[in-house]
Length: 194
Image (cartoon, rainbow, N blue to C red; front, side, top):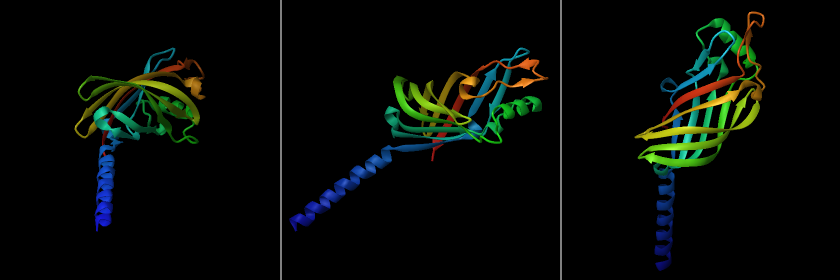
């Protein structure tokens, strides 16, 4: 009888620990209609902007109360990038070879710095792999994360060179208009509980 009681208590303790660990891990999914991704660039004629509203992604936390991130994935279909000008969009899709490569991807590999500026607001640096046209490069992103009820908001900005990822900067009008190699990616990503 004592052995049965002992086994029952061990099983109950195991279930409590398992349920606590499961409940403390939280998963969130990106909400594209509330998120923004803006790419800013230059050319020898004028500056330009292109945006996407078709991003997808997920983030999960080991412990959301400590902003302990377990994983972060983010994808943008390059065909979703729009400037409001058909000619520019066509040149962008040609440069990104959208017929062949369907997604630009970011995958978190490591959280390098985490600072809590005030409750639910964190400054965080993460390292991850950015993949454009299957050219994979490690990059460092500096972000601000705001945790609010069932929402996670990640904001940041990153400068990259297109040629680092095998992208030839687009040209127009027989090469008379050329874009600069460096672009700035500004993003505000909203995730909600799955």
